[in-house]
Image (cartoon, rainbow, N blue to C red; front, side, top):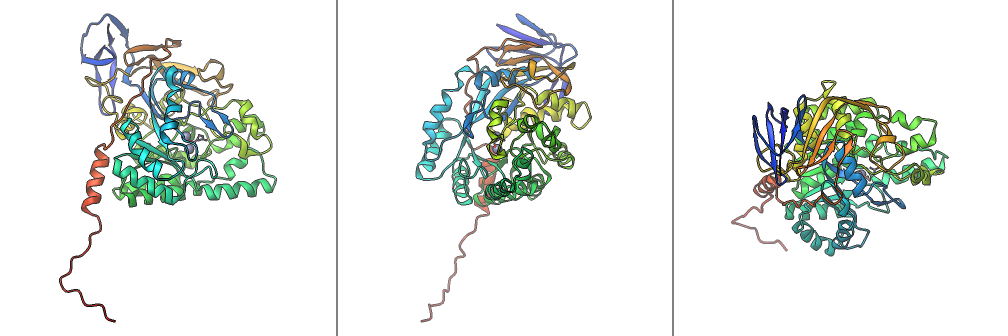
Amino acid sequence: MTTVIKNGTIVTADMTYEGDVKIAHGKIVEIGRHLEGEEVLDATGCYVMPGGIDPHTHLEMPFMGTYSSDDFESGTRAALAGGTTMVVDFCLPSPNQSLLEALAMWDNKTGKASCDFSFHMAVTWWGEQVWKEMAEVVDRGITSFKHFMAYKGALMVDDDEMFSSFQRCAELGALPLVHAENGDVVAQMTQKLLDAGNNGPEAHAYSRPPEVEGEATNRAIMIADMAGVPLYVVHTSCEQAHEAIRRARAKGMRVYGEPLIQHLVLDETEYFNTDWDYAARRVMSPPFRNKQHQDSLWAGLQSGSLQVVATDHCAFTTQQKRFGVDNFAKIPNGTGGLEDRLPVLWTKGVNTGRLTMNEFVAVTSTNIAKILNLYPRKGAIVLGADADIVVWDPKRSKTIKADSQQSVIDYNVFEGIEVTGLPRFVLSRGKVSIVENEVRTEVGHGKFVAREPRNPVNRALSQWKEISAPRKVERSGIPATGV
Ligand SMILES: NC(=O)NCCC(=O)O
Ligand SMILES: [Zn+2]
Ligand SMILES: [Zn+2]
């Protein structure tokens, strides 16, 4: 069957123009005027954009004694409902577990996905087995490796392990990712706060101030530079971390920063709410920051020093959050946002003039497609691309409410925010999955997307590092050793 999206304005990361889009067998087969097809989707008054790609989700993830509540079924449904057509989740091996064994476990979770997905592999320990298996993981199309510099005693790796892993990434043409917070300092700060009786959710924020993130970001950048590999910093939340990324990029380093929609819009005052549940539901790492940090993140998106807006969707119910009722360090870290990322960013970004429509497409889809070597199969409206498309109605509005969301949790951190700009249609490889409020997603339609290593940035950096590597000076007359 052929489908035509008619009468819309196509908006990509670099162009805005009138045109119809024809789809067959899940791909874009024609772009032009007055196209015909068996199924017609009317996009009058709408923008036809590449579907969102969320490169940072944790679906059904074992974490802090429980599992995140949205799985690949509810998570990908929430994604599609909000205009996101691909998610990249994290495979987390336990300490000493084989990466391949962990991957098999994660593969088992994905059968219910209704949009396409990929994985980042986490490096949670180091040894010859990990070194070897990283090559196999890359062969299977997973070309990015996550390193947690926090969560001491659980997922955290030290500098030695990170440097080894980053060098392996350089050899394999893969991309290292970091959760950048100084885990040693956070662990001690946490204990000090608890000893002083400071056990509420607000102490979570006190235990990991912006300096802790800034230091780790600088350290990860230095280690990546020594290893000769690009670096992607997840959930960049503050000026200190942004400044490190900005400075590195100004020096020509290949470093990317990813603010979350939560950090752009919600601030630290959320933790001072006197309702324990309200504050605990917003506990995530890094924590929400103040308005100055938010301004810095918006400026980074505007100026190009930050490239991607993600969600870090890791949803826990109120019941799960209550594991930490006497001790903030036991509150499962994470918030939701998959369904809300695009509408909230459009409302707070495009509708306020902070972002152009093309910048919106860049930071929600195209930039990450390029960084992860998915472009132009994903993140583009071009011939041959996957028909992962959102038809965006800039006039549709709603008030965000947990009651009507796709996520299975019982609250929404954006509750009460009025958004203007919502999908009219969302297509996942050509399948019409969302028609305004009607959900037509198909369980199992989502497929794993394999990625190739050695994207152009990896190759360019390796070439430059090879040319500029330290070299032994050849000397003709070497003096005899004087004994
Ligand atoms: N961010 C967060 O609080 N939870 C998910 C795990 C992580 O990304 O650190
Ligand atoms: Zn993290
Ligand atoms: Zn995360």
